[in-house]
Length: 266
Length: 166
Image 1 (cartoon, rainbow over the protein chains, first blue to last red):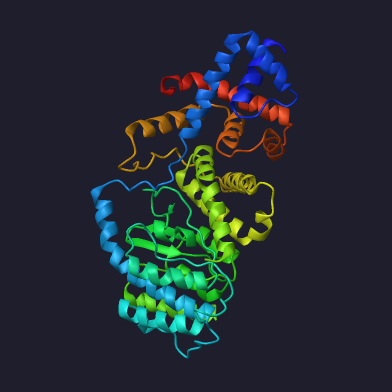
Image 2 (tube, rainbow over the protein chains, first blue to last red; image 1 turned 120 degrees about the horizontal axis):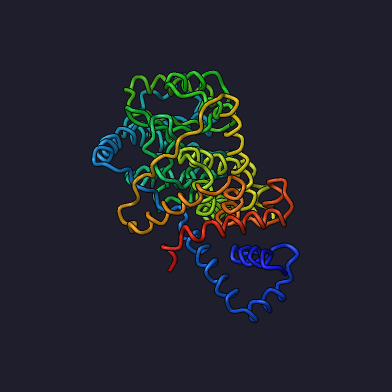
């Protein structure tokens, strides 16, 4: 092997896989005969180790700035109530439609106590102890700071409903409103892997999941002034359930959106 | 939790650090990296019975991620939108050592000096965990050509990261 090929072979080995066509034993022999080659390899392996250690951290980075944290904390209460209530509506309509067919959507159920009541109805109707409904993907208002009560309620239901969900890693971005942010689910619910996208807007955040391919869902998303990219995402994933939580919208608007979506999910 | 959910969750936990790292270093836009990560996870979920049966599901995830990045770049070119300028990194976790952030910045900077093909190969190798053959197939190269690009990239990176080496 000439000097150039040797340099390439050592670098390839440092990257974890020998150069195709290289005889590994022969390379070992050459390194034994020339200690500088072994030293070269060791140095390159240290670089590779450094690169691997520079992996993106598993823990999400915090958004910098006191103001961001304060806004997040203040929004949490509204986000939680709205998201939890709408999730209950979405589940009712999409999963247990056979048992919960309603003339009018439960739009009046926005609020923590109403959510609990709806959830109890859902759990009963879905037969928590019985066979699960059709599997699907849905989102939950989960995050590191989310209170545990809704999580404790939602997660067992999700498990019973045979949902497969996931929580992608990634660091929140401080980018402009069109940036999508990802947040890891709270550790105690990671096994259930909630998947959700968070669209950061100046006034708050919207939690959205892929929605059924329907005019009503599309109209609801347009009402939230989403960019075309999200609407195309919605159209790509028919048959799943949409959850919308928009803390910057008032309850009346949220109720109207929920009302638009419920017929779609039946 | 159902067995299927547990298996899918285990797959995600296994692939997540590598995939997230590959995307962050392979693209200039952290938001793009996050978006593509989500898209890959959703694609894996939709195709889980098939993905689960693959010999190397993690390699599948990297392949999908790379294809999505390429598609985004093509769309930008068609729409004549400029590629995003490299964004400032988000604030690191409060408990992350300052040194770790500095290393990551140095790695990002060093990668930026590589030609695109070398950068792509080294990202696919180190964080994507692909074999030379898989990289070659993805990029339309022989496995030997892929390995040589990776080797050249590593040789270029080494002196730029010398101060961080233990």
